[in-house]
Image (cartoon, rainbow, N blue to C red; front, side, top):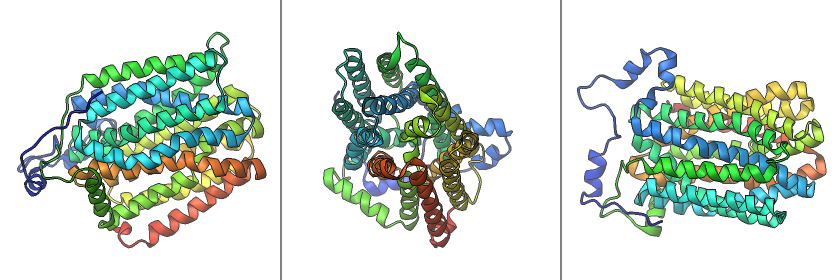
Length: 444
């Protein structure tokens, strides 16, 4: 699918001076934060859905996020079922993470220069095709681990271009004052899928006439619906200027922009830490389900659903209190609780401890990442949204990459020890960096 490059005749300086977010309050208009603060909490939570195009994007992407969560459970269960090795699960997730790590920066440059709607349509089509390939391989009994790794690489490549464009698109569809709310609701949609997806996948895998192959067929059909919905959205927002940097120069310009901003640097580091140390537990949940709790596929779906319920609560909380002033220090507190609850989950080695711990883990991790992402976008000028978000999205590639060494360590020392120590290390890093960094302490 060809990507249309919009044109513009304004200069960079003119554009920076004149650009505003769609829907942003104009001079003399009532202050949006004051109006929003006066609303009941249940209206504040869904404030950004008043924007018709964001509402359409949000609803339209729900099948995509649901399919992605179903795929995480199904891929992990299939890989572990084929090999019986946690390291094998790591290799499959590695196939997803490598292209995201090395191509996300290019994806950010593309997102700043081309139609974001067309990028989303193209990448969602590729992911749907990947799900169809997995369905064929499973249903014909040809599936092997190397097949799963290659298909994961295909999906990771698509997401390297999809995620920066999607996050930048959100910023273009809502006003600045609704940005934190929109980002939180965007994460809420993902976490709603985390609640439903694992349970649905676990239940479908256990049905004989559907099984793993049928799950992949359903996922492919869901991506078809997503592409149709995105096609109904208009192209909006910031356009690249005629004199703006291109190609590698645009990439270097984006990196210089981040390095010159102390707050953005701090936010990026605080995004990398929990992803590297804390989020690998999700990919290794099949190991906990099979080896630690002995609950099988249906139990795995239940554990992931409980975790997703917590994440849903956390992201809705951020959407509701999007005007909270000390958001930087709030994020630090959430990161500390995230690490401690992860250690409690791992060292407890009891289902009675695991269930409430997973609720807290889901809530704190989702709120932490939603706050981080909204702060990054708030501290970024619109013309850099794609490139900055591409670097922020690279944090997600660290999660599948970290699963490989973590998987090896799990095979040697056991999942509880490895994940528990990771949780304690996360607590120490977030507490130290977040409280000692001079610029970050001033973030509001």
